[in-house]
Length: 274
Image 1 (cartoon, rainbow, N blue to C red):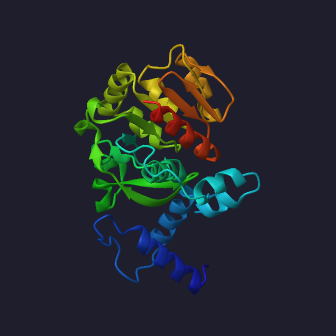
Image 2 (image 1 turned 180 degrees about the vertical axis):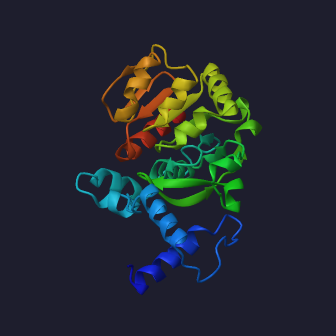
């Protein structure tokens, strides 16, 4: 027979488990029954412990071997007008890697560029998925550190609102989920295709290049990307180089968060020539 404490804990957790998205309790307070304990046991078998790896920015910058990345962010920017008059669209969705968006955005703004964060139109999951989103999901996108959600960033526009002639460059950050959300969006793919035809700069880091694969603009291109998407990039017609940054025509790509400094500098160099 279960002890009183076990039943009390089971009842409390079971009570929490049966609070729906609207905050309605589906079991009465204090109710501890054989059915409730059984349901709790099933729920425990369907769930995994909430332990995850994180990559806080301070830890990333202070990690051995990342001294150059740390210096990039902590050395004052000298030329505050290097990119004055340039406008950059950052295409991003839920699940973007925090440092891969906020790092370059900070740098480009320090150089005087105008930067817009552009997200797909808000499209909540069907009710049957059992998901609930905060109200801010209508105006913000979710950041992750490695694979752990960590915060929200407000976007400026949606992909259906932007035009090619409004921007000088497009930048796509990585993150394991972000590119999958982007490559499914018709407005995003159409914009990337049209932007590529214009010959203007398209930059993508980490998992970001798979969006370019979905846009079918990689045939004959040299590029790089996170190791587990390289097969996708090859299948899309690209040639993979194992380098921190690869520039080929109007395309700049990088591999992972540690390349953020070199990636950002390459974008600056490309835009400064135009």
